[in-house]
Length: 199
Ligand code: GRF
View 1: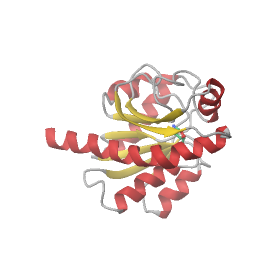
View 2: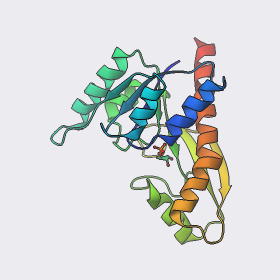
View 3: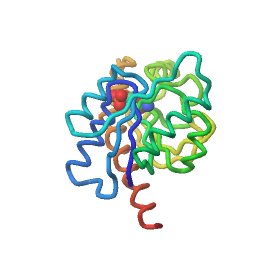
View 4: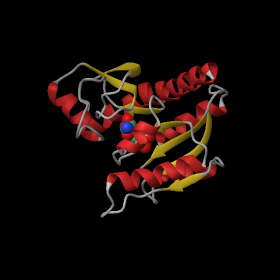
């Protein structure tokens, strides 16, 4: 499956996907494009280092969602993209993109959905709220993207312990290392494998 990884920032999840692919763990997944909403995302450097084609599609301030969606779709079509992995993509995906790729868009969220998810729950805020609530277990979730923020069908989850003295930053890092970087490449491959088999 020709897969695009959509990013806006550091790209550690992208790196985990690249590494899993290099280890031979993603035979049905081709990382065909890294698309960033932001031209200075470090994730673009990671893609270039690994010879992966890149594109930047930034949402202009005056641009409405359908027009931005059209530009994203054009770029995805030009690269023959079949599957999309959102790996820290901070721009809301327009509805025309979501409907064009029904059950073909995966997102990684840094909590056990439905806890600490939905509108406004991204970045450190997720972990701040988890610590505030005093949960003893958090984790990560991979889910399909539909029109509801963090509301699509769940594909994979992994729990991670919250420890005494955790700060949001420490918890964020532990969840990335123990959950996100493990389950995201696996879930992408699982969807790619299933779709390849059904073709
Ligand atoms: C991760 O915490 C992920 O769960 C969230 O955005 C962050 C992306 O980090 N969706 P990175 O760019 O992959 O390092």
